[in-house]
Amino acid sequence: MAERRARPAPSTRKHAWRRTVRPEPAPPPEEAETPGPARPAAAQGDEASVVQAALYRDGVRVATPSSLADTFRELRERREGMAWIGLARPTEAELLSLAAEFDLHELAVEDAMEAHQRPKLERYGETLFVVLRAARYLDVSEEVDFGELHVFVGPDFLITVRHGAAPDLTAVRRRMEDSPDLLALGPEAVLYAILDAVVDGYAPVVAGVQNDIDEIETEVFRGDPEVSRRIYELSREMVEFQRATRPLVGMLHALMAGFTKYGTDEELQRYLRDVADHVTHTSERVDGFRQALADILTVNATLVTQQQNAEMRALAEAGFEQNEEVKKISSWAAILFAPTLVGTIYGMNFDHMPELHWVYGYPFAVLLMAAVCTSLYIIFKKRDWL
Image 1 (cartoon, rainbow, N blue to C red):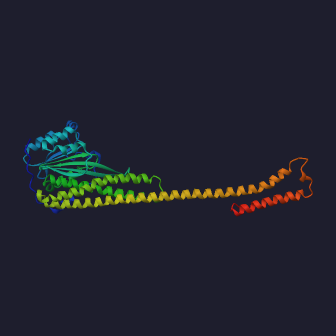
Image 2 (image 1 turned 90 degrees about the horizontal axis):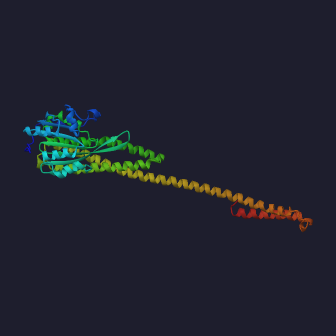
Image 3 (image 1 turned 90 degrees about the vertical axis):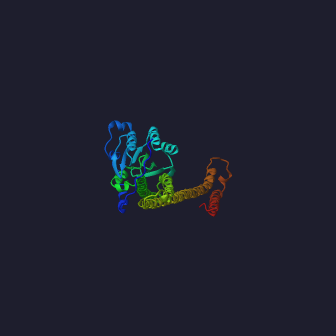
């Protein structure tokens, strides 16, 4: 195992370097992997997960090895310099070879293999292990896609292990190579630039989520039946977003606490404080989004309940009106039934019916029918059936 080399001494730089490390929009997929010289076809097949491996001296790229083995050999041969190795979904064999070459702790390597880790910052001797959760907003599906990035930072090397589509570190590498005075500060400068790129990547997500919440508010008051599902799905994404951003606040404060102990460059200290301010702001926005979604869900439930109550009241009123109509119909049917009954009885063709030959039989029958109908009318009227 080759002995690790000391970090190059910080060089004097202009204060304007901070503007040069802001990430640019993601390049097209076909340009995302190799901003430097292309690797041979055989090497690409053997090292498919190696996105980019390069050696730097004084902030300038001095070698672009085609494989991990070549990277190790080049690093051993050069007395000064820094190796920056980028991996995407590496195999277990690749991670184990990196662990053997750079004395990576087995627990950190195990975390990098399994992925699905929470954001954290751990130090193993001279090696710093950082887990970051990047995010990007997908406009087509209106969803938040999360990626995971593991970073190993040593005295003369920096290794990134990416799980997922985000983040794209090509812009970070290109910007750093365009600022050799910054890159000359070593792996710490690259780590802080990666942190900045990840945190800046949260801004489009925050804007997209804010737009989604505005749309949801409109749908809630419009009575869209699918809005509850959308609120629930966005709330789950905000839980993941909160898990990605909240630990970063403590991680960055832990890094700032080690400024004096590890002799961090003064410009990098300012840079890190700026990143900490951004992530704190983002974390507060995410907390606000979760609260807003909870309030919107409560309002939606209230509106749905009110709508259901209104529908039930309308059904009850319709049923009441129907009952009133049934009462009226039943009352008139009862009133008309009395004379019909009397007329039916006297309409029977029997020879021996005393009332048929009675002089007052007809007036009596008429008065009887009138009396019964009047009595029924008065009774139903008093009961408000008529």
